Length: 622
Image 1 (cartoon, rainbow, N blue to C red):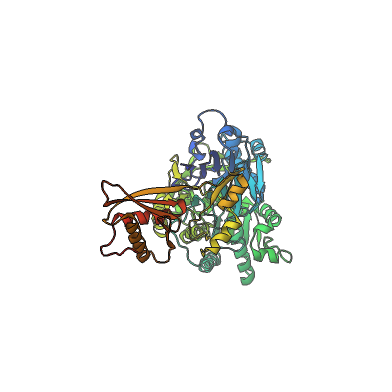
Image 2: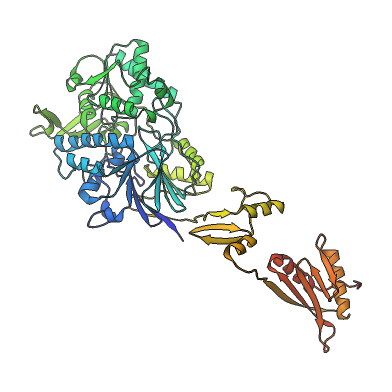
């Protein structure tokens, strides 16, 4: 039996380091190639030795597909392609191809140039990796080879995010990557057609959450920012460079304008310009409102939001700062947090999910004392380096500022995941990119509501799904006309029904035609196939009288059938011929011979069963 195998190398019962291997129809595909934000050792990247212990990955993989530019989905790409070794095609959308190398280079700078880590990819490796990228357009079917095809669908979430359908023959898998089923201020909602895949692999970050109204959350966010600024406090909002950052910037920009606020809002240097550039370039990926107003006003050119300089963090008075990265695991957001954490007037608002092991995750869980590396950023005029203070590499930090979690995350909640299942109508479900306990809850709910199997493999665990591929068959017009003439309803995909015809296989395609058409096309003569059955019957009458009694009996039982008593000493019911004979030794034991064509097989079986029961007493012969 054909089967599809799915093995997570990352994001199996875990958030971060998304990397899923799919084997379908003899093809091997890697879905995403991310890194884990919570680790700084070997666990940071997926374990590619699962694919092969030695040598390059090229001969084991047919293609790699990246769903979007977030580092937990693409952060291990240069390591995989350049350090482990992969020369095949890497598919991603145009916005992802443009933004991915910038975020990879930013992360490389933080890890190598500032922290001084080794065994990491170089700038050149990022460039070489991106040369292998093949860009994808939405709804365009791309033929990877003669048998494997892929198609991208809009996923919302961040600029350029895509869900991907993978198809080999009649088997198919849909991988969602990260997606959002509700539109926001700058992106539309995810959408997919009713493609009925064998497996739908979905993220489940918010598997047990049903989010409150977005408008209430926005009002609450603005109220908290406003109150902190009014009392002279500083607000830190850790974000990733593109995505929620733009969403919240648009929200604050509008509020500052309306309330005539004077406190400065800053954004990590350089990233605003880059974000603006890419949103202008890929305006078709944003929502309808932004596309409509873009000519008159660019929503991403902010009047109140200015570029941030590190020295501003020590300025007195209130301010709002958007700083990267979003989980406080490194970079500018962590540096500012260290400076502001000791003042209860200040506030930190975490607008998205934080992976276990990050500072963001620790403070959201109420940790008030943090032990961390006391790294200082030193500038030598050309570049910045993070190094430990002599004799003091550990820092004990007391968290006094207010910590707020307000989910502006662009992930689907439980309601959104169920909505996507209704849209796509998969035969099986597989959950990744979520916490085990939450997945378990959602798994039960999906199985209960949709009566389909739902899987949640851990990292390194393989799920095998047996598929029953449907075989497409063309039906001739003559056969359909004949079915209609017989009074049968036309074929309906939701109501399967049996159709009788001759199946012809020619040039790897199948056609169902009328027997007459098949004989004509193939130049064959028709042969009649008949079935014969012997039935013994006890009857004291002569053979002709017994036949007459059978005729009378059948006339009374079979209404609406053509029954004839023929001069040649036979009875015919449709195509069925009945003859009676007996031997001289046992004249009362009659042998009935029933013969019928294959079209009347059901009727022939019914008659043989009926006559085995004998003839009713008192039945007269004609």
